[in-house]
Figure 1 (cartoon, rainbow, N blue to C red):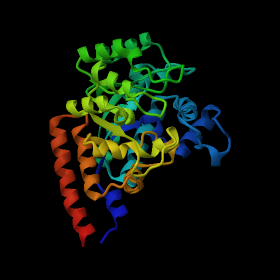
Figure 2 (cartoon, rainbow, N blue to C red):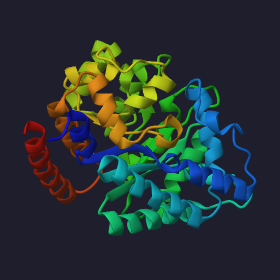
Figure 3 (tube, rainbow, N blue to C red):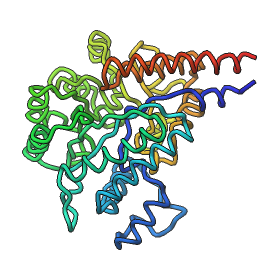
Length: 348
């Protein structure tokens, strides 16, 4: 017999909202920072991941990119992150947000293909070792200009990789806003070339539900990252319901970036109750002291969600994924088999 926390820990999972740099181990971060002389945001190991809010966290997140100086560093982090997620949460498929623009500012810049090929090499090795499938979403750094975003999409078009399937946007603008329509030209170009589209919008108390609407109607997003403010505007909620838009949520990060409490009054629970498809992910596991197992094991019960809801969320992660129909079918069969086996233990 197993407990509900054990069941949620062992449930097979996808992860659709995961920033590659944030899959780094704390020990790897500190090791590489020492090797390359990168000064971290604090020298107090006990306070290394204490952040006041989203803006404070993003300062540390940007610095973390600076310790990844070579393709080998990137490939190492990619592989280690899969090993950890399999152990801590039974990860079976994951999509990664990768920001090539950060690496272009290194003292020895890494090109788009340097970064992407290193990511793919590390994840392909992990797929051989652990059977975890993956895809890559190239994320626009919103601190950069709209023109640089268009140039980034042109790099994707010029250097296609089958593992790279979409475009996203993250970080915040220099004004610390989301402003998704600033990058509309890049999204239009991505759509013209068959790339999937997503965006970080509606994430914090200061964000607007209008950003969710803009991402759906103007940017043509196939799914939304975060998007919690969708439930604050009935018209935007109805639009998402009508379009069947899925939302890649990250429960634990909202306790830091938004200051929300994980309970039955949380917007994620309201999204579930409204019938929106949601998946559950870590967002930035390293920085928020979380892992995929914890998001299910502690996050879902805190939201008042049970084992049946957890299964629906796990399957929604497959439906929302940017992989092939054949891979989705394989994952659904694998997940349903695991549900039967784990359910027998939970009910014993």
